[in-house]
Length: 631
Image 1 (cartoon, rainbow, N blue to C red):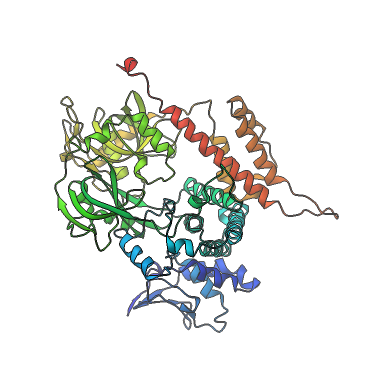
Image 2 (spheres, rainbow, N blue to C red):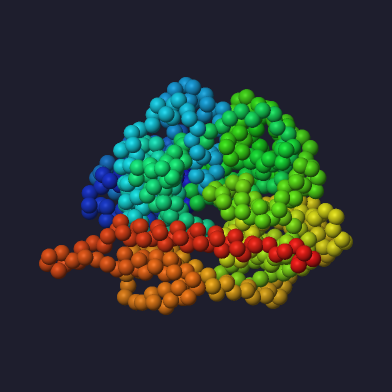
């Protein structure tokens, strides 16, 4: 038996969403009011472990137990409390609300489905949790278990209402009880075959918990994007399919990512990309390219935090007999036979897959060099069109020259670089201190004139902006500052020995030099003040509908939007505030509750418009100049 007096040294086992919802819904109205306070109290209590059981000392005489023989709490009976009010006490629901949300595994209905799933498992953990489930492939078990249309519509409506309640209350008001309602709706949606919205609902709960706990990794913009996608999908699914409308099959998603035979592959490593997902998963994705120039991914993603992401690159690639780590694969290669490949080119690790380690190629040799020959404008258009933020389509392969550091309010460690005749701002791919991104960008910014061949991801913004994943030397360049070899900027911390043709300053010197020599960032284009709309939608999510219902005028912002030619944005902003403030009265003159449906629709329209407009402005910002004029 292992004991520890520190509450955070013993992790709580994940709890299934339906268990949390069941325990919270069973509470009396009096105990529901005490749920958040009880969860906060339990978070500070000492914990101990005994095999598959975690014990929490509620007080000197009372113990709370969580039994997780499979690694997760699957039933309400697995949470036992020794207080006098048990099992109807608040402690069981409070600890369920405090524990992480367990990953929901699909229940296969036949041995054939189980065999297919076993062959399709991805290496090291589940698929990329930030990406929506792939479009379904007709499968006998899936089709046989598909519920009727009305069940799906009712489940989507319940999930929509739970999401609207989050907007009504905001982050501060979205306590354990509201989260339990959202998890209950997510469980019902999953039973109805709505796998994608169910996963989005769980991601929303994880984001709310991170925000309420003041997690340094929380980003309001990311949570806003998750809630927007949840409401957008549910709004489409609660209506019957229409010709020319959204594809309901793609919106529903699938229980697991489908895999098909891929034959034999000769893969060459490119880079390792750290993963810190908003769903509570972490790890690494190693990107490779085959002899034909097609990209393939080997993910190792599982429940965890920044510590797992920082160490995942040193884990062994679980694919056949490939005895190499992800970092070694990024600079080497693989020979794979009997490969299984998902539609988004993720490699499976089934029993029939065989793989051995092989030699890699430099970035300037084929087949890797072909990736950098793709015109940049085509790569930008491809990245803007993809709906999956972590997909291969979102990768950008280009060359650039470091110009120096840039000062941006609230965005440290940003540098400017010249790329294809444009001035591009480079931001850290992740700002967490356990990863090396910020350290490396400070080092690079301290070396103006540094020529780099990079792998990056596009950041939708009103100006050209990238997040670097890896960097290496540019082939055939004149003598000057450069890198000796490709490095993964999330894992390898740059040292003096990594650069050629320059003296790289130490960490303290480079940071001080960047702070003193940084040039102010150019202002955002005055003709596109989309932030006036986006900050209202984010404020509504942070503080709830009442924050937009306060007395005050939005006339100034509305006029600025109209003056910039964004009349639709001005109308959406006006409707958002009206929906937040309008409250009808009954026959006695008493105020009735606000129309949550109207406010949710107004919020969704405003935020979705802001997202699409930002992508259009991003495409315009990346409009490459005429090569003749650049020359």
